[in-house]
Length: 255
Ligand SMILES: Cc1cc2nc3c(=O)[nH]c(=O)nc-3n(C[C@H](O)[C@H](O)[C@H](O)COP(=O)(O)O)c2cc1C
Ligand code: SF4
Ligand code: SF4
Image (cartoon, rainbow, N blue to C red; front, side, top):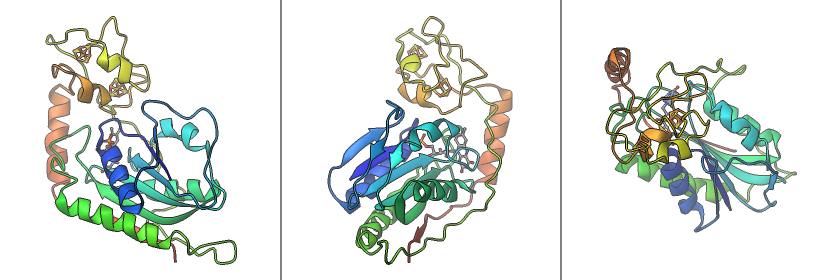
């Protein structure tokens, strides 16, 4: 089994690994935040691929597309997972499923799960919760049960929520910054997937390249890096109201 994920704020990793663990123990872990794929990764005919992506503006993160293009299936079973911050996943799950099917995989299950919003962490703050974890494990077990059922002769079909053409990709207008508590430890610059932090000036952020992924906030040992400002606080409050309803996990299976 291969388990591939991009998880700047760690929730996508947790969800993806929990689903994979319900399929089989172990597996090769591919963390795209630490090391984007630069060469093809071939998955065996009988081997399961589990891919987890966070939802960014209703799509999978554009930054991951070059890595995902290196995943090569050989009629291999796959599970597609997207993790979103309780607003919506729009076309992200369909996009990931289409991408894997086009690259030689048979997606046996596709799941959308909810987690703390990485830009507005007061939204879905306690997700994934116990019920989510049960749904994630059930998804993993169902994928495992279906993995051997589909072959050239019986290809099956999976219908996933979303529309084509996909939603136009968008970007957040918020950027994190550091404050006086910064000790210049360098952790934020080291983790940033877009090199938007100069280690010489770690309280600043390159506006044009930053994804707002919040990886720098997660690793900052002093709590120096954060989203700040009146516009951000206002947007956060509005988002808390807009996304207050408890959304449920969703899963789609090949039949
Ligand atoms: C740039 C950006 C855009 C996002 N867009 C959405 C969105 O469209 N819908 C949503 O519900 N959550 C959205 N989120 C929240 C993330 O999908 C969610 O917090 C996810 O759990 C992050 O995964 P991670 O913890 O692995 O980084 C967005 C987050 C970021 C950083
Ligand atoms: S500076 Fe931007 S892109 Fe870099 S880790 Fe922080 S939020 Fe992510
Ligand atoms: S991780 Fe935090 S303390 Fe370390 S350099 Fe970055 S802002 Fe400063």
